[in-house]
Length: 305
Ligand code: NAP
Image (cartoon, rainbow, N blue to C red; front, side, top):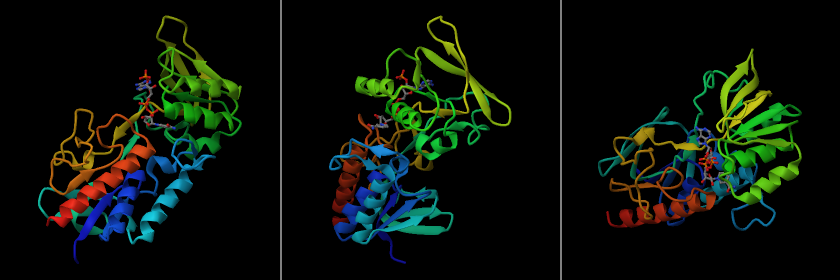
């Protein structure tokens, strides 16, 4: 079988924008996604800061629309987990659980995933009270008390989402100020059922069959709390999904791909787009912009072959 002009790894906004630009330029494009299209965007409730949607847009809907845009020009999606890559030579090979695919260029757009907090029993309680995705799991906690850990945009969005479903929402943050913009704090205060635990960190998950509560400690010498809650939503940042190509593609000390604004990696014909790239702002709009640049750079590379 002829190699694809472009194989894209990851079906988030970076991947599907690259697929749109690549396919619209007349190239054969295969996009491989391990779970469902959309990446982190697909599990976000409402997105208010992607331009063109005055009333906001559901993350899942935006994901489906981005996929449809790319497929309209002929890009193909396969839901297959990539298990290995050979990227160094002029012909690239992508191995999945179902087979091998050949490509002339590869665009890496595998994004990032939620960081674990590292508490004892955190992994075994995942799905039994510990969650990393409020919009995925919030419904299971309807009417119950829950805690959110973190102070960034994700923690705020999770706390707001859960405040509409749950009883009390404890927001536990290690500092006395959110990392998210101040305007977000006002929204949380308006919700009426969000209680802030500032200068605090989660110390112990309490459980029987499922999570039953959480012990916190104060970092400023005050007294910690024991909270009764059915769910703990951990939102303490992300780690890039780059382990598949570590050792081939140059990464920084935190595991992000070292690629400049032109999205070129150290390997000819291999480009990096979206949250997995070292960059100052990780948003849907910057991921989409990376996807367009990466596809254009792939196009220039292909034209020179
Ligand atoms: P983030 O911005 O990196 O924030 C992580 C938060 O977790 C910070 O408040 C941090 O505390 C805290 N934290 C980190 N490690 C911790 C630990 N070990 N224990 C306790 N707390 C810890 O991550 P994010 O909120 O997931 O957002 C990731 C990126 O996506 C950001 O660029 C964000 O702007 C973007 N995003 C944007 C939106 C939006 O604009 N609507 C929504 C979601 C995400 P410190 O503040 O003390 O460092």
